Amino acid sequence: MTAYSKYINKALQGRTCHDLIHPWTRSCRQSFLDYMGNWSCDGFKFFFPAIMISLVMKTKDNYTRAILKGLYDITMCTVIGHISFALAMSWSCIFCNVLKGCYYSTTVLIPTFLGAQTVNLLPHNAIVGHANPFACMMAYVGCYRLTHCLFNNFTNGITSDFVNIAAGFTAGLAYAIWPNYNLFTTCIVTMLQVYWQYLLNQENCPKAVKEINRLPLGGLVYGVCMAVAVQVMVFYPDKTARLSYSAIKANSSGAVDGLKFILTRPLFDHKQ
Image (cartoon, rainbow, N blue to C red; front, side):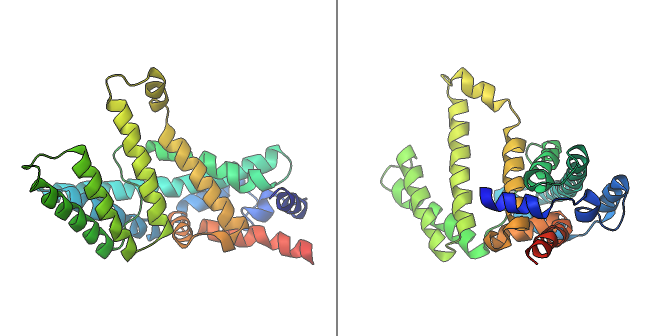
């Protein structure tokens, strides 16, 4: 990794943000306006199934209100996602001008992290994620409820922690329908999130945990994940997960895809 970053820095030597970020104009300000104006419906289409399916599954009545809320969350996610990538490009320009050159970490990684902090403008309850295949979701819900019903026959309808754990474990067998790495990591993250919330709800919750919870951890974690994902997509395209590629391409309106082509061109030129 270190050797590769040195190679990239050598290949990018002498390049400017005009060469790498906005070759169509010499104005950094104009490039930001161009990125902001380059809207597409891809981000909306990416978030639509993730948010709408989740809301419909959770809503027991008043579907109209749920749909309107879902459309609002989708719009917010799409707008904030687009703005974050436009700001990332501008941060890249700032670093290139301040440092008098473009470098491995300051062209994509750090600018993407800073731009992604706009996610803190999203409503706290907005759902950012992706939908799993319908069959997997139905199997998960079915297994969970079936296990609950079976155990309730032996416990006189009293639900215990053991029943919840057993039902959750059985429902996890639905993973066999779609053994996907992204689904696996989503489950791990959800488990940590639930356990964190469990700690916060305890009467003897450590003060340090409460203080940490006040920090904008969601934006920070999202920023780190997005920065790494974009960095990998640009400089290590063969290592990029298909879902990550689709998400980044959709939410950046194709800007990162174009940036990947522009940034990797100096590498091929350097090899020659």
